[in-house]
Every structure is written in C-alpha cells, then in structure tokens.
Image (tube, rainbow, N blue to C red; front, top):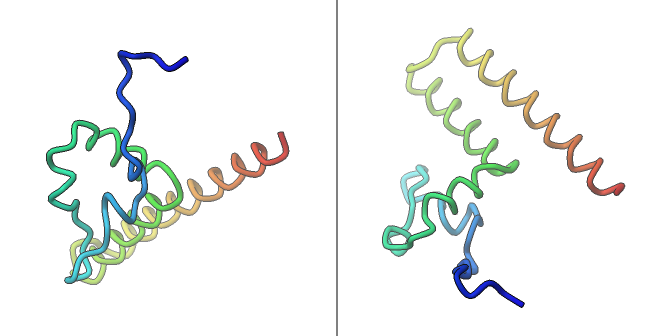
Length: 99
C-alpha cells in the first residue's frame, strides 16, 4: 500500500533531456514548466547523477576551453576526472547487472 503522505513524482522526473534539454543556442536550460515544480531540485540532481550528467560536464569543459576560460592543464585535469568517474560508474552498472 502506498504511503498517503508521500507525493508521487512526475513522469519526467530525472530525465535529463526533458528537465535540462539542449537549447537553440547550444546551451542547456531548464524549461519554464519545471520552474513551478516542487521536485525541480531533486529532479535535476537525479538527472545529473548518471552518465548523462557526466556528458553535460564534458560539454561544459569543451565550452570553457573553446571560450578560453580554461587552459590546457585545467582541461586535462577535468577530463581525466570525468573519465575516471565514467569508468567507475560503468563498473557499478556491470556489477548491478550481474546481481
């Protein structure tokens, strides 16, 4: 039996391409419809917690480099960290698939 005090989550909860889609200018932005949602913070946090979130962070590193906001060593360091996180995330998924 469902907890009557617990609110149900919207269908779009945690779906990166719905709650943080790529905009017309090549930048990601949260849609207006999400601004009034009581779940927006947890939803975006959930969406960014998977490999999609790591891809968004890679996009940010590329944009920073292209704009000249970060140098070679900082870019290399961030990309290395993201690569390790992806590898670790992939290993977790393999273990959960075996279980």
